[in-house]
Picture (cartoon, rainbow, N blue to C red):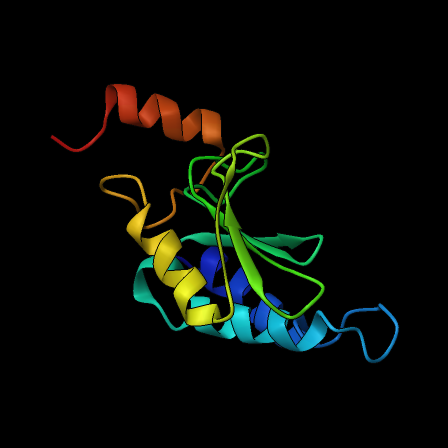
Length: 135
């Protein structure tokens, strides 16, 4: 795991329970649990994490813009989870009551040879894979 990836995970883990949303949000506990479960999985821990809209995303690169080739996990208002992706317009894969089940669904759908995260942008990663990728 690169220092950049490790730092991103540390920041998300440290702030997962500190959202600026109103106290008592039904999403706070499930979101925090989901982040911890995902971090516990070595295959996901080597990817660059980012969050938004109570979702946890994973990128195969550390730079902006992230790759959109890995499913992501979100929280539902009733404390459950959904797995969607890899793109925003992809259909929902599933819903589940358990964070661990959602994490497992993402792991099952990782692209071949996924990880560790490439230090650079998605464009640089694509060029590397075309020209210098592993043989």
